[in-house]
Length: 247
Image 1: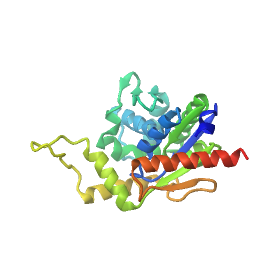
Image 2: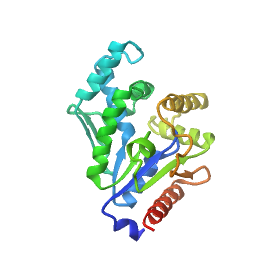
Image 3: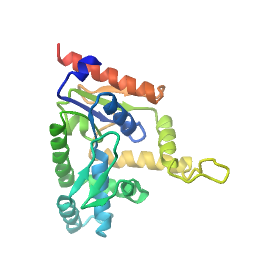
């Protein structure tokens, strides 16, 4: 990895379906590469939180509602930490780091993210963050094909549906309170989890493609890998892609 640490500019773009481990793996990859970390999904969640706070009906399909969403998002002042060790999201001066992970936001984010003008506005911000960072690992929808198609390394991180459901369930249920016996209280059934994961992917696939790697995008399948092995696989992919481009 010495060749990678010597690079002043290193952009790693990571996409993949829900529950594939994009965020946690990308964050650790950024630490290992001494790079910044961009969670583009947090930006769409922040935009959704703002619309909900303004009382906008995100189930409405009226043109006037769509324009209101666009106006609200583009007027918002978003601050986003790119330190992989510091998760912080601020909207109009309010810390919403935890609020954007609520189920209410999760259920509505696709309605906001699916608006073309909103995507273009946030994509422009994402590109600016990437350009200014120099060394960064960016994860989320559109990253490998739209936001950073010229990244030094582009990866589609995936896993079987069964594994993704299990990982997503663990992630969601770690927010539950512990029971009297000290065991983690599970708040999501298998049916709930499948609905959360598959419906979110279905909604997102209407505007982005993340089930198959585009040309030039390497696939890392973590079905049989643990977290550490997945990070190593991603780092190896980055090293190989960078080496190939420098030949």
